[in-house]
Structure formats: C-alpha cells, structure tokens
Image (cartoon, rainbow, N blue to C red; front, side, top):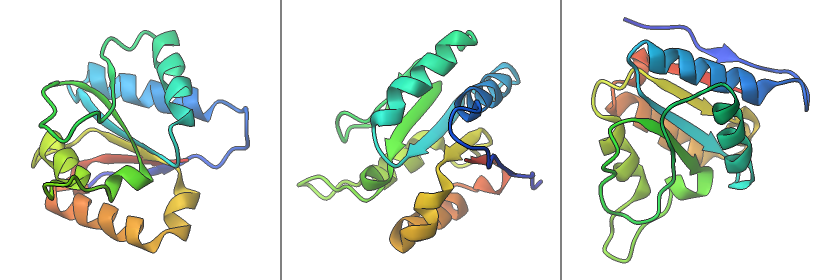
Length: 144
C-alpha cells in the first residue's frame, strides 16, 4: 500500500510547525506511535516540543545522545541532517540506529525541511536509501 505525501509551502509564522504536530498526533492516536522529524539544525527542537505540548501529544521527543539502540517504543525522534551521516569511533552509524528504531514496517510520519534535501545530494541519497530499506513506501512523509 502506498500513501500520499504532503508538502507545506507556507511562509514563516503561518503555522507549519503546529500543522506537523497535529499530523503526528493524529497518527499517534491511530496507532502509529513513532515519528521521525528531520531538521537542518537543533534550533527547531524547542519549537517542535512546544508545538507538540500545546496540542496534547502524550509521548516524548527523543534525541540521539549515544550510539546505543533507542529503547523508547514510541515518540518523535528528532534528528538533524548532519546526524544522519554521523559515525562513532567504533563505526556505528546514526543512520543504522534510526533505521533499527523505525523498524521494517514503519508507517508513521516523517517530517523534514525540503530545501535542505534539494541542496544536499548525499543526504537525499541517504534518505532515499533509508526509505527503501525500511519499507517506508507506506510512511507518511510531510515536507515543509
């Protein structure tokens, strides 16, 4: 089953963050309790937490602190584009850490900032690969 994706092309201050939060909450309430939020930088972490809190999202916003497996079974995983390429001294990658947490049949929400994808070919390749490996053709992708 394939699903449609959504592009939010509004300007600054229109409410894209709150819209993304609402889509994440709706999917959470429908049983899809994992979401991935990919951002150009950590500055949007506080805004995401605020938007999710304001609409009553019950799970945590997760960040990647170590390279160990993510133990949370639900929540929004906040990552930056640079973290998708990160590698530990032991060779572990953030990419694999994220892929393993999402699981093979991830059907939740992936949200990102599209202009970064358009300018970073290596990140775009990694995301396409992540989607294919994780069977993410059933995920709901929200570009903003």
